[in-house]
Amino acid sequence: MNIALLFPGQGAQYVGMGKDFYENFNEVKFYYEQAEKILGYDIKKIIFKSDQNILSQTEFTQPSVFLTSFVMFEMLKTKVPKIVEKIKYVAGHSLGEYTAVCASEALSFEQTLQVVSERAKIMASVSKSNPGGMIAVIGVQKDELINLCQEIKNEGYVVEPVNFNTPQQIVVAGEEKGLNKLQEILSLKRVKVIKLNVSGAFHSSLMNEAQKIFSGTLDKLNINNALIPIVMNYDAKPHTKKEEILENLKLQINHPVLWVDSVKYMLDDGVDLFIECGPGKILSNMVKKIVTDSNIKVY
Image 1 (cartoon, rainbow, N blue to C red):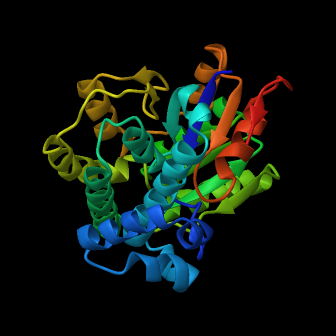
Image 2 (tube, rainbow, N blue to C red):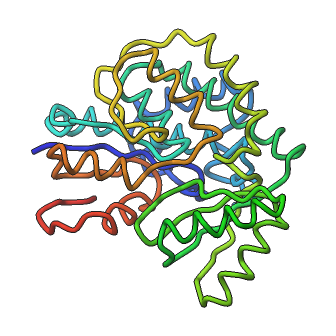
């Protein structure tokens, strides 16, 4: 059995996520207490008692999803150690990549939470000065969508495919006017489009400023080589060397998430069990749309 552990990103959050772990396992409470000291606010209140609008603000979403996913990973290690021994790869989608880096022990829990919180603040701030949005496009071939975005880009708008989630679902980020133009073209082709509830054009060139600022934050980290190979978003390849991990994290913020290629790499290298570790089932549902072999298990 070869296991890949997957960690979700922004969009997986919901009020009350991880509460059953918090209430049933005393060892989990330590991480919430540590998080409150590091962040300087009551993160339990935001995760367990706030409303979806507050939780969905980038600066709260990212630390909350990381904390919830990390706690679930820690409980998996404690309660089912035999599964952890068989992990061949870890991977995370966007923000989830930081949980993967932490799970591989390239970064400590404290360092990861600090850097995730800083990343969220920088992305939220840059999104105000470079406003944009994101849409999920369902049922268009990758090459066709890339060409459509390029045509709109040639007219002077920022519109870029940024998350290659499944063969049938690609997320596009960009300026609102450009996205509206793309939606008009796609509606004529009767293509389904879903507007995402996010506060910026993440993973696009509108995040170039964020990348410059955030690279300075990443350079201050005391990062280690990973104990488990991390299949990373930027190049869909496994990394254990600390220099490569750092470089990939820097590039991730303003480059596409190559999720389909990442999953295919793990499949080709013998992974036969994918386990999503975090709130919701977004990644497991994506992986089920990528996997064609019924012998591959996805949870």
